[in-house]
View 1 (cartoon, rainbow, N blue to C red):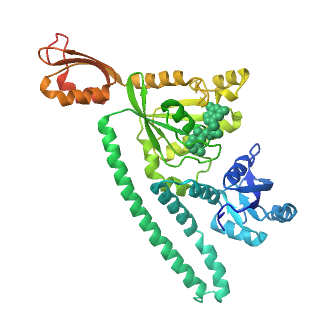
View 2 (cartoon, rainbow, N blue to C red):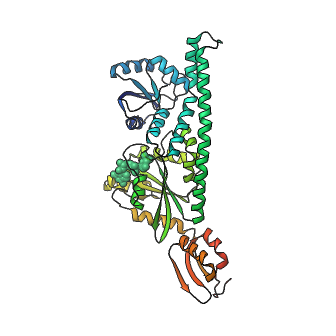
View 3 (cartoon, rainbow, N blue to C red):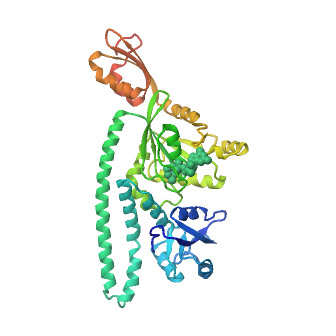
Length: 421
Ligand SMILES: Nc1nc2c(ncn2[C@@H]2O[C@H](COP(=O)(O)OP(=O)(O)OP(=O)(O)O)[C@@H](O)[C@H]2O)c(=O)[nH]1
Ligand SMILES: [Mg+2]
C-alpha cells in the first residue's frame, strides 16, 4: 500500500463496510485534512469486511467501474486493512489503496512539531509499514523466480526490514530518553502539588479553544482534525488557587493502535491527571455525538485513564438554538454547557471544577515556627488563598488544602485549644 505522500492533488474514492446509519463523512474529513479530494463514495453493508478483499467479489466489480467513472486515482478505505486485504485490493483494482490508519498517520506526520511528536509519528509509521513489507516481498519474489528461490527481491526486502527494525529500536530508545526528562518535569510539578486537569476529547471538539478561553493561552486552533499533537500545559488560576491545565491530542474512532503505542508518554499526562475535562462538540447530531463519546471512553480505558474523575463539557453551545440546548441538557444532565468561543458557561465550568476538587480539600489550621520559613513559602504555593496571622510562637495559618498537602503539614496542625498538637 502506498501512503499519501505530500499534498499532491489526489482524487480518492472513499469506501467502507458499514452498519446501517453510518456514513463516510468522517473519512472524507480525514481525507480533506490530508489534502485529498473525495470524488465518490461506495458503501457495502455487511456484517464483516471480506477477509481477503475487504469488499465482496460482486462489489469489487462495481468499485472498479466507479473508479473509472469518477476518474479516481486512489481508493481510501474507512477501516485499517490487513496487509493481505490491502495487497489483494490493489491487485484487483489496479489502483493504489490507502486505509484509515495510513491516512491518520499521514495527518499526524504533517502536524507533528516537537521533537518528541516527530519521533512518535515516525515510530508509528515504521511499525505500520513493517507489517506491510511482506506484501512487497511476495510480489518481488514472484519476479525473482519460483517459490523457494532466494531472489534479489527477497534480499532487498530483508535488508529493508532489518533497517526498519533497527530504526524502530533507535526511535524507542530516543523516546525513552525524552520520557525520562518528561518524568523529571512531572516530578517537579508533583512536588508543587498543584491540582492537574487535562482536556480530553474527540478531535475538533474545541479542547485547544477552551484552554485558550480558560487560561488566556494562545494554543493553535483550527477546523481540521488532529491539529494538536503536543500536550501544552498552562497555569490556571481559579478561585484563588493555581491549577495546571493540559491540552492533549484528540481521539478518534478506530484510533490506530500504533499511535496509542507511540504516543504512550504523551497520553500518560492524561492518565496521571487529577481531573479530566471531557470536551464534546454538542452541536454534532445525537448519534454521532454518542459515538464520539464512546470512542473517547474506549481510548481512555485503553490508556489506563478510565478511572480518572471526569467532567463532561458540552462545547459549542453558541451553535445550538434554544430547543437544541434543552435537548442536549436533558440527554446529558451531568454535563456543563459552554461555548469556548463566546465564553458562555465558562464561569459555571470553573465552579464545577472547584466543586470537584473541594471534595478532596480540607480545612487546616497550622502554626509554623518562624524558623520554618521555607515551609511557609511552600504552603503559600500550594494552598491558594490562606489566612495568616503573626503570633509570638510563629505564623498561624488557616487554609483549604488537598488531603496530600494536609498530610505533609500535619506536624504543624493546631488542635482545638490552640496548642500545637
Ligand atoms: N461554534 C463554535 N466553534 C468552536 C467552539 N470551540 C471551538 N470551536 C471551533 O472548533 C474547531 C476546532 O477547535 P480546536 O480547539 O482546534 O479543537 P481541538 O479539540 O483542540 O482539536 P484537535 O487539536 O484537532 O484535537 C475550530 O474551528 C474552533 O474555532 C465553540 O464553542 N463554538
Ligand atoms: Mg487542539
